[in-house]
Length: 375
DNA sequence: AAGGCGTGGGA
DNA sequence: TTCCCAAGCCT
Image 1 (cartoon, rainbow, N blue to C red):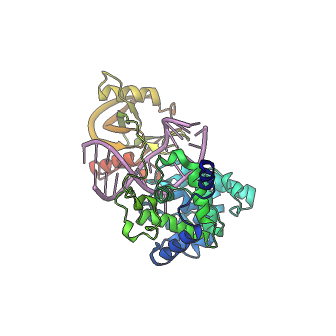
Image 2 (cartoon, protein in one colour):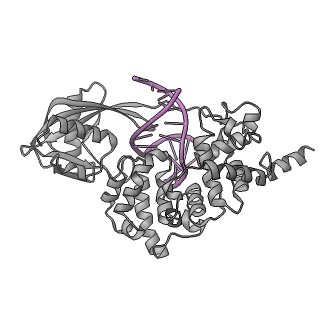
Image 3 (cartoon, helix red, strand yellow):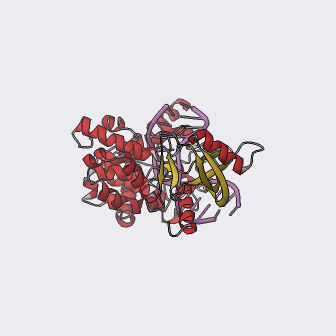
């Protein structure tokens, strides 16, 4: 008996038949689905538009992506345009969205689509997965949306919806195989595009992380978490490691012409390819001013005079927090060299908006414009 | 395979 | 203020 029930569980990962789930979800979606640009023709028929939307939406909410969406296609109307564009222009268009490897990979992948697929986004899962920045969820999202192919997805929304549907008693990361199987069982239908979009809408608007609206959920009657009143406890969360807090000294170095020194970060890693004001971590028993002078000597090989504080910027990344102590500095001697960065440049405040900067640095730029309104 | 990788918003 | 969460991928 034990053997039979464990086999049944393996073969039938859903609490009710897929057909019942599909019918109720699609009926809900037809009435309550969101109206989003990338799911409305002609955008949905353009795999490039669907692709860009899927990348931008990784770990990013719809509301954040919307203002970037149309602007992106004004700058890069086709895959060929994107492939030929400057990486710096691509990063500038992505500025503020975060996870900048997405923009670097999108740029590189556009070039690969030109080389491998004649400028047409591929129609097979294997070819899509071979492109940088496209994993199983993004591939399934693009191919189901653009070509109506019955491929499953497992993003944060779908994970949460399915975990509650089956009342999974462990953290989702520990049962990914089972969740993929559940997603595949639900999507296999004649409307895979709508079904995947409906799953994500359900997670984003009804089956939310906090205070899910179970009373208006089309799956209320089938949801094992709701039926056992565990919807607040599921999904089970994993313990998170504490994150470090770093204190950073940052230099706004000006020359007699009123120009400011900025540097471009190495192409890979944190904020790769973006520009910044130079600086570094304050060592134990070191003052902010000493730190800035030392870092600028090490990174750029020049001597500066550290002056007054301009602003302190507190910023939280995913894995650590920083406090940027920004000081106005004067260039004393030496030609700036790109020792720990890819490039250095003197720029005016009028020119500086052409360069892509991370959020913490745009805050510094705003403070500079207030301090020197005539520059 | 666990950690690196951004930012904005809500509680 | 602080914490948590949100359409993942890569190594």
